[in-house]
Length: 374
Image (tube, rainbow, N blue to C red; front, side, top):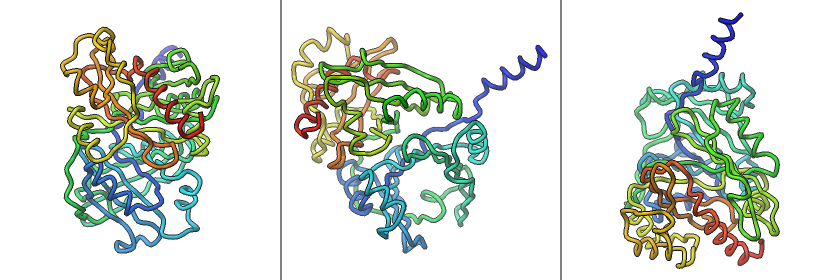
């Protein structure tokens, strides 16, 4: 019996869901054609593939955009009575699919569903002249799904059903890869979803922030970060906490109507260049007052960057035991105050900018106050 118990423990610590990283993020939007133009012109994504009526897909149109290892798919329905139209009516533009790149999609599906994941799509292998891609999917918080994508035997632009296309000439802003994706869930659900990622997907709890860490005079939230074995995929999960006024998480839930992806953090090697270029193209960012920079070096110690360009671009800095990071947050990318982006450059730091939480949330509260939703 003793040997059996030891063997079971050894098996349970094995990574049953090895992930190579984020394969793509699919947004369900009201007008994919116009959204594709926005991400090309404003963020410098390159249009690489398309699926729609011209490729035999009769109910929707999808545009695949890429920059570095970041791949977005923008999809809208061609008819009013459609699950994508219904999703958009409820949520506005939002993330439907967080797709994970795996070596074995069928095994990933089987391992997660047998541990309690709710199936969203049984494994299916798609084939064309460029090879084959196997995909499967499970449900996560809200109406979001995780899709497992196995593409080692495929050489096409994206996957079967899509054709390679060329869009407008673009200038990349320096996006490298998806650093992490943050989900907002309803009060009392954070621990449930952390347990889901631990039990169903084999993730580990990386860090916990409570309402003492993430609070201002008016609002608070709680957050836990889960990560897969190799650290390539990190999902912070937020829930509201008690405060004097309505928190940013409550505002998100009011407008998105369910749990969902709040923001996507994208890594860059040169945040000053990236943000400078984005600002030139009209991208709006949260504003942190200039006095944030008065004692910056006292707070974070010596950094390689000059303070002036950071101050001019409103880029924030934080340090942990392993180094420091630079970060900035866009305003929401649609009229509903829901999904937005974080731009992050890591110089050794593995954390998430805890030292900036108060300044950031005060910035968000100023935006909420202007919207009348604080």
